Length: 163
Image (cartoon, rainbow, N blue to C red; front, side):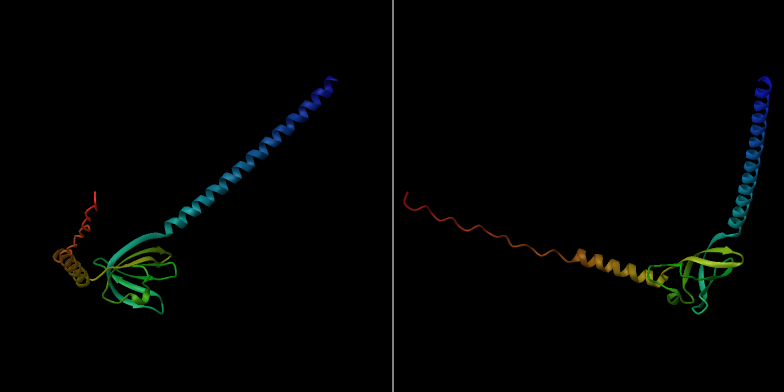
């Protein structure tokens, strides 16, 4: 009987050791896979760079969907796609003309510059006109006095009869 118990215990011990080693191997392989995936994600993130440029539009190609912007430091050509946001709302690449001042936020990935947003800034002359028009409106409001309201008088009371 003692031999049978010893054999059963030794078999259970062997199974316990093999199960523990297989579990350790799975954890190691899973952790190495996770490390490799994290490394590839980091490498992909490093390749995509978010940048911004403010300057004057030197060229617009609506057929190729590209805008070239020249700042004080550099000249950058960006590609416009369907995800590109134009500001003010409702503007498109057709509304961008050479000579306009713009602010472009774009991503640089694998040598390609893709525009994320293009903000068309109003020209200085347009800003001045808008300010002048605003001042004139305010002056007109202040200069025009409010029309005087006529006071309505209550009807005269009739004298009481006979008492």
